[in-house]
Amino acid sequence: MINHRRLAGALAGMAALAAASSAHGQLAANAYSFLEVSSATHALALGGYAIAAAGPDPMMADQNPALLGPEIGRVAALGYMRYFGSSNFMAARFAQSAGERGAWSAAIRYLDYGSIDGYTPDGSYTGSFKPQDIAVEGTYSHDFTDRLRGGITAKFIYSNYEEYSAMALAADLGLNYYNEENDLSLALVIKNAGGQVKRFNEEYDHLPFDVQLGYMQALGSGPFSLAITAHHLTHWKLPYYKHDTNSGTDTATEEEEYKFIPTFFRHLTFGLQYMPSDRFYVALGYNYKMRGDMATYQRSFLSGFSLGLGLNVKDFAVSVSFSQPHKSATTLGLNLAYYM
Image 1 (spheres, one colour):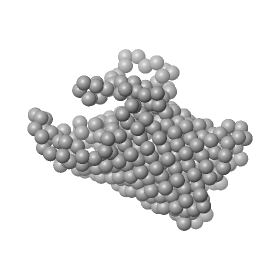
Image 2 (cartoon, one colour):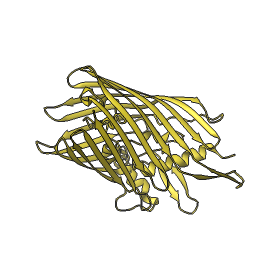
Image 3 (cartoon, one colour):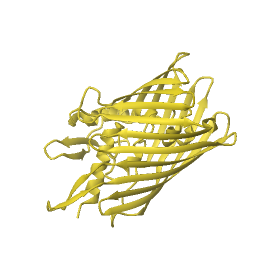
Image 4 (cartoon, one colour):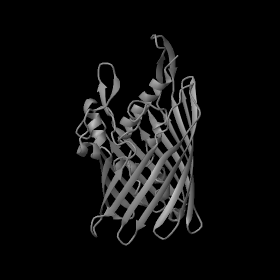
């Protein structure tokens, strides 16, 4: 029989490399690390995290449910990301305003890792199979004041790895404060609070629980904005990961001494956005932890950096993102939205 925990950890590592976000699957070898992979190209372009990037983009609800608001109107959106190898990430979301102060959305996210060869612990070939992760989500947000909004997302999660399957329930809770006069956005999100309701076997797998803080503000009166997101705030000493090229395995190492400055920056992602109008943006992101973790994965010059742009034309919106965690893992994301 295949070791499902080892397989889950490997798949989580694949998600981490492909999404170019800081810690996908790196705090524990669990089966649900795909939840940290954003379906929003805007967030991916800003470094993988962007919980304070306010705007009428329905896909950003998976970053922070409080980013969804009545200004969304009615919109249907599709998302796709091409991972390295044969892995694909797809998402669909429908969102609609609910009165003058509320909004709701329904979404499904699907991660297909392609075909993988299976082996027993003694090395016997068991045939190929296709691991899959699915999350079905419902989101509701409400404006408490003209500047403060809260939101909640409920998730049903299903994973299937060869003969193993598991289910879990989780919720995201978010707040967003937006001052339009100063173009200032502040955010707080509690991610993936919940647990398994059906285990793969007798062992319990944890969800990637996280607490995040976000800041985004225009630089002066110009078209540039700075975004900073702090993540994994419940785990100060994030493990360092080293990749063994010969065995193809990842090893978590706890350093004897953590230096404050490097450890502090491993919790931060940075984004710079140029938005000359509401219909166009270009974004650049930097993920310090990703660049460091990729040092043993044949890191490229672009490791840790991400880039993206978005364009709105009448009732349609399109946005793309690009990142290259290491030389063999270029990822491309695409979002399409239709405002009805």
